Image (cartoon, rainbow, N blue to C red):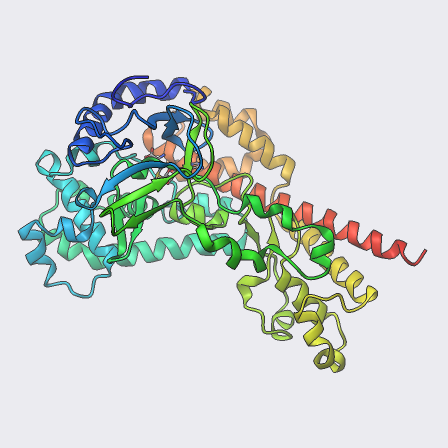
Length: 498
Ligand SMILES: C[S@@+](CC[C@H](N)C(=O)[O-])C[C@H]1O[C@@H](n2cnc3c(N)ncnc32)[C@H](O)[C@@H]1O
């Protein structure tokens, strides 16, 4: 272990393409960790001025789980204190407003939201370059974000599902609106031209949304040097055991347990007594393992929106299928409670709403309380609900432009895409995706004679495309699992009549 704690060995692995980036970054990383130690950040009860890491944690690369992150440099026991970041080291709107010019100019723009203000302050510091007191921190921030607001038309359409496309459009419109509103202030502050662009704004908002931690005194949150190097693990995995076919049929489903398991969703919090952001181990870790933080419960679409990644197995995933308006009007369940869980099981509310809807209107009033308490109404009712869901999932899958097999193939091609020097060569290799390929060409705006995927812009676009394809693939897999689940229930109920 490097004494600075900037490099952890063990289970972390590197890819070849990352090595160059790492080499480039290592210099700034060591000085960043030393700078943070100077601010009192430490993973040890006996802080060192040389590096803030090395006692419990070290920076390492996990290509399949978040890229750069923090690894255990020794065996760690659940509940142990891992890292403390003093209040004075947190980057908040308040700390940034110590800059007099910023503070004065801001007074003339009272309508900007707290997050807009933090974004402007952040870009202002970026624009100051080495003159910013936060320069060592700003230098090591990742340069690209695949957040939903960054999705162009091509990536949006690649999501294939209306509500996801709509969410991407909404994120983009919101970002555009907020950027335009904040631009006069940024001009008055004389930010360098590259920090005035919409691209810079998207990057800054992506950085802020994916790295800020909650603090009680500012709703925009804080940037937390070193504390923001923890990658994410979804909370709630341990609850999967609660749900099985029996208790679902009796009406108990994961969403009802949310209040129980939300008691401790995060493993880091600001502690007034310590005047520091404090991080604790949520589980036991072996030396070399990645230490993860649960930022909160998010569906994959929300993870894409705020963090720019998604999880293949996300216990908090919610998949929505198109529902006829009279299903919603026949019950009072909120729209966002009517979904399918990651394991293919319909949510409690979706089952209750469909049980009522599948009952003749004149009987609904008398059975509603039973359905709302999660009970099956009758065998016939249950079979018709399960049949309806299975058919709906099937029709939804059929209406999508590509199948699960297509998407799996496409994902493996996207992984290999960098091996092709030439876009047209790649296009020939995968005629099955002709339409999507043409759209990619248009989106990258690359001409026949300028065919490389090597440009940073093309690479970022392909990363976002991959995220979109991955998202729709997970969506489809959940529908397939839901069909199997409904079919099993139908078969089991029907066999009772035999
Ligand atoms: C707070 S930062 C974590 C540190 C970050 N990896 C870095 O290099 O600075 C959050 C970002 O890390 C990445 N990330 C975190 N957890 C992840 C995971 N489980 N899978 C993929 N990416 C993840 C995403 O890009 C996310 O926006």
